[in-house]
Amino acid sequence: MAEFTPGVEISTETPTIEVTIGPNNPLPIGRQTFRLVVVDDAGNASQPDQVVIIVADQDAPTAVIRGPRIAAFGKSFELDGSASFDAGGGKVVKYVWTYMGPGT
Ligand SMILES: [Ca+2]
Image (cartoon, rainbow, N blue to C red; front, side, top):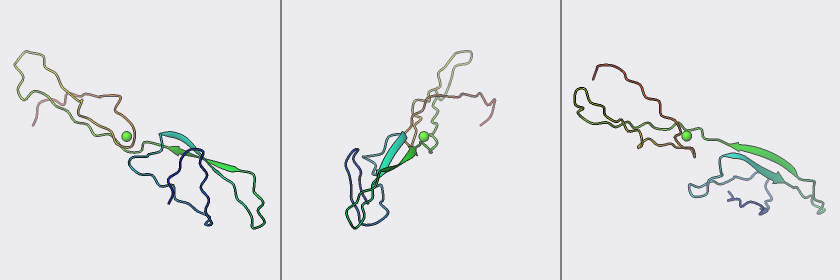
């Protein structure tokens, strides 16, 4: 387990490392690059290799629709989706409204 800071090397004697992500230090959405240099038992260091990890929002948002409990006949009224929210590091950018017809 390791919390990485950009540009700061972390050395291990094991060939794997967990990139520990907490709720307060998420990697930003987008392409994130990690670099590895290995050193042999004679102290010779390799050329670096890099991998690009794409951090993506893979969680769907939640829609919350609100409206007046009663609307006067023949009068306009407003629907409100502002309580909708997203998880996974993204944000709601589009609201798609549909009148479903009479019903419960
Ligand atoms: Ca999302």
